[in-house]
Length: 636
Image 1 (cartoon, rainbow, N blue to C red):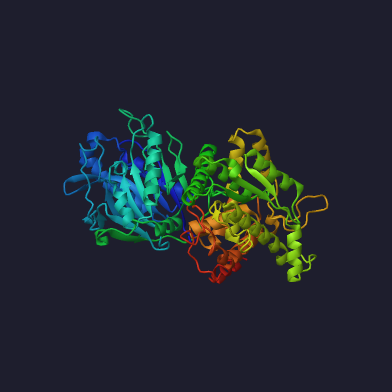
Image 2 (cartoon, rainbow, N blue to C red):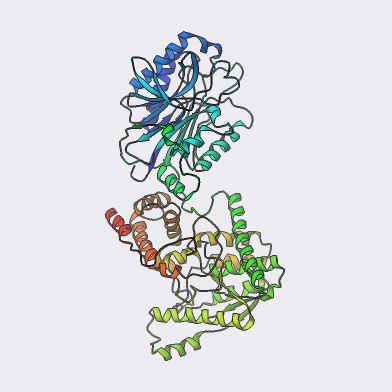
């Protein structure tokens, strides 16, 4: 559990109404099944010991007595199971009847959490449980905490604090889980007995996902199913597990299935470190915290790990996201142009992905401001590594967008510069490459000054993270529209525009840009005229680096956890040794290249990961990477 994953399960045993002995066996069997699958937190439905549909039988001492004994029987039967278990049962306290979640661990009863908000059909038999927690005698002089304000803390995983609520508690205007989360709960167990109604499943799904997002928590909801009375309703056994707004697992409806997956409680705590409003309750003494033990063996991951965390997988949502990002970029540039009264922009176009997106953004911004797109000066600056393919794509894109293309070759000026500084042109070192990048930036800046325009930068977040930019070369501009957009996301945006622009000429160019290898084109082309210098051969695949930077900055994960997640996400694509090698490259470059990010130009934020020194990433330029690299060395 070092990396924060805890396997959880929501189970629906097949019960019989009022047949407590049968229900004990069914509950124990469900708990054992989940435990055999590795679950360490197991949640059963509300009132599963008796059945939620007993009606006026809840007034019978025979049923209540059997239910009280049944909880102890379940505790004894599961004493060898290494898990925190929540079981639903009716409990009489001071002549009042409560629907309760009973927390069990290794044969011990840890606490009893009563339902606070009752369903309308439950008020005939039950009363609302208190929030304040105090000890009650459960029999045989065994005193346990009773009340809603309880947390159950894992001794082996400090970030795992579990709270419980029941059924309609979640539907209430102010669910108890809000205060539980403020008190520190990272996972909420909901023991529910909700009948199935038309549209009910989707509504429950939205509620569970929404509450987990609001609380930055895990949410495990187990619902009653087969075996409940069908006199007036049917129970579908909809079991749901969510984490921070995402449904991770759901059992099939109208069955007695198990929803099981892993929650990442360390990621949830990392989210809360950044969020406002999680400063705790006014008086934490109102909560009773009970510890429980768990073994610390590693958890096998079954949950899906997205290899593209910056982009949703659903095609419709992806298209919407691409439009949203383009809108943010275009409105940001339009705002800057309006603020400074500028009617012309200068873009260095290479025929690559980044300058292509920058041109698309400029075109949209000009449309927003009502400017003639001819005011977009697209300058192509062929050098020693420029190929006919990229040069042609740059020129054709400018024409397709109605911009003004212009060509300014840099070969002669760079050779003059080599002569001035005494550099041998046959030596293809950093000076050879960077002189070209800086010459291009000088041209862009000077042309912009000459025409009263603004240089729009093309560099992206992925390049900034790796420092794959020439300092005071392509690293610099007057406004950097792509600075917060990673390379993998740029691909999706360009493809989206190609599919939706309605301009055959523009779409054809965009598709060819997407098919072109990523390259700075600073080294001479191959003899056949193809690109010789491919970026991903030198610094590694951008899909890996974007994965690394997301989980490092968005979640604050350790290198070993990022490595584990990457091995899962890219299984069958990259060998673990390859992933580890590029992760080391990423860590070394990320730290050593901060000085470039410390003086990067203005540019709009588009998501939760950013590298701007003005709030996206506040980091000293001379920070050491030794801790991160040492952890990766241990993996070898």
